Length: 127
Image (cartoon, rainbow, N blue to C red; front, side):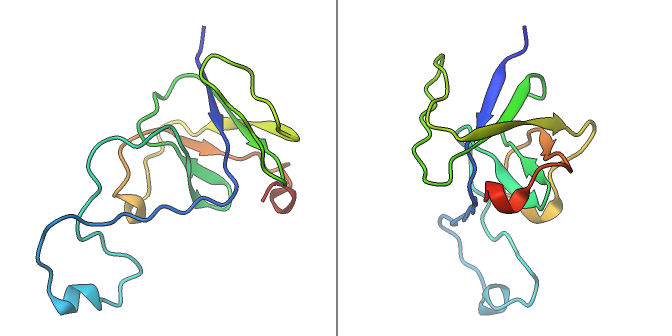
């Protein structure tokens, strides 16, 4: 029986802060879109990270299973391990993108599946 993973995403932003390490002012002032100076160690908690308008990375999660995106405009979603999700207005199934890897600009994330939001989903209503 596949495991079910729950995504309770609104507008996720992940900020990787570096640990000890000396970096030049040139590195800090780089014109590159994003430069990882110190990668965040270890696995993240169960959470998805938006990589684009219709793709979500889920670092540390196994590739098998069922993934759903729950949404509640006013908040209040409650998702306990082994329990039912409550407080959500709606949910939709996320597709697993076979063979996809997490984009290079998100290289601070651990490996994990890449999920797709269905084209039929109204993103403006979800976010």
